[in-house]
Figure 1 (tube, rainbow, N blue to C red):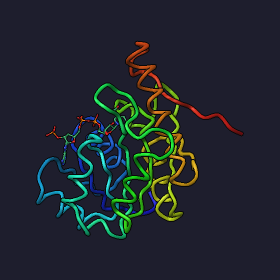
Figure 2: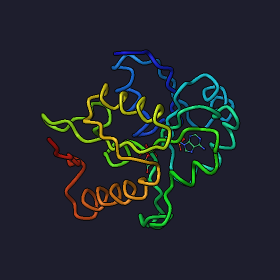
Figure 3: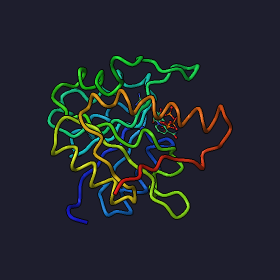
Figure 4: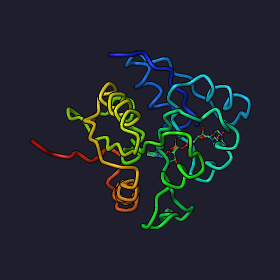
Length: 196
Ligand SMILES: NC(=O)c1ccc[n+]([C@@H]2O[C@H](COP(=O)([O-])OP(=O)(O)OC[C@H]3O[C@@H](n4cnc5c(N)ncnc54)[C@H](OP(=O)(O)O)[C@@H]3O)[C@@H](O)[C@H]2O)c1
């Protein structure tokens, strides 16, 4: 591991706990917080990198709680903008990640891990294969850090371009959910991007 990072995770559910395990195993210092305003604010101040792993509907509240503690921080957006009926909440002409960036203009939002089921986020692997972690963001240094974290967990990390490409990654996650739950393939599935 190149550098030990201070990583804060907001949301201590399926995604937050799995990524937390993977990142701790990779040697990073990780703090995870749930619905506790003071803890969210303190953790956002402490962390170098903040992972957002809350339901889409909780984002506004979390952003308000963290406030300017997110300024200058890499903010990893793992959320998927889904309505309760599981349809895409933001359509195709924007993305949850871009809307998040507008809410926290001083943070460096990076979309990552959202196309993977939480069951595989601890290892980045399914059976004997590494799954692809697509990583999109506008700040090259923040994106490079997240690509490195993904590789350290065990993913095959792929630079998926600017944050605008979250418009493609969020529907891809929607497809994953459709395949897993609606078409009943289960959660032992995942995307693997082949390249030379
Ligand atoms: N599950 C997956 O396979 C998967 C894969 C990719 C992306 N995602 C996305 O990742 C996000 C988290 O999914 P999940 O499956 O981990 O959900 P989850 O298991 O329901 O966990 C969400 C966590 O966020 C916490 N939370 C809710 N409101 C909060 C707030 N205002 N402040 C701080 N914490 C708050 C919840 O606390 P309480 O338990 O107290 O409510 C819970 O610990 C979602 O946006 C989802 O779309 C999920």
